[in-house]
Image 1 (cartoon, chains in turn brown, red):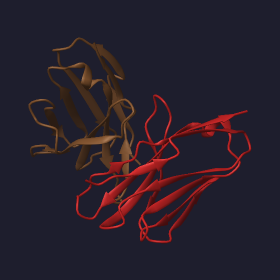
Image 2 (spheres, chains in turn red, orange; image 1 turned 45 degrees about the vertical axis):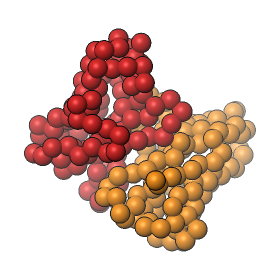
Image 3 (cartoon, chains in turn purple, green; image 1 turned 180 degrees about the vertical axis):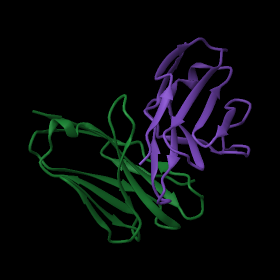
Image 4 (cartoon, chains in turn blue, yellow; image 1 turned 120 degrees about the vertical axis):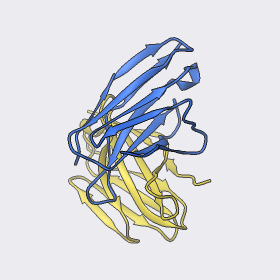
Length: 114
Length: 113
C-alpha cells in the first residue's frame, strides 16, 4: 500500500479566493486521482493526473476551476479557484496500487468557503 | 449515468451485534467492486477489492460477498465493536470507464458499548 499525506488538512476560505491542496506519496506512482465529497454526497472523481501530461477531467469539472499540477511521480497539487460556498467539500487525492485494482487515499482536506 | 446505492444510510447497533450493509451497482460492464472503511479525519481504508461473481472475502470479523449478475454486494460485520464505528463506502469500477471509481454515499455505522 501507499502512504499519502495532504496539506492543509483543513481550511476556511473567503469566497472569491483560491486554495492549493498538496498531495505527497511515499513511493513513485503513475496515476494520481483527485476526488471531492460535498456534504451528503458521494465521493466524486474530479480528474486523473498522470506525470508528464495534462490532467483528464471528468464531466462537470474544468481546468480553469480546478487546475492540477503533477511535476513528478510522488507529488501533485489541486487548486480550487475563485471559490464559492458550493466548493465546501472534502478533497482527497488517491493513487493506484501496484496490483492495478487497488486505490489508496490520502486523509483529505476539509474546505469550508464562507 | 452509473449509479451506486448503499443501504441503510446509517445504523446504530450495540456492541456484540452482527450487522450487514448492501451495495447495489450496475450489473453490466462490471470490472471490480471496492469496499472502504472511512473514519473521520483519516484516510479511507481499503477493505476488499472484489472482481469475480460469487466472490466471498474475509478480513477478521468483516466479510463481503459479490453478485455481479444481479448487481449487489453485502458487507457483514460479526460481533460489532465500538472501533468498527465508521462510514463504509462501496465503489464500482466499470470495464468501460478506465480506472474511475463510482462511489455510493456510504453507510455510517455507530456501535455503542
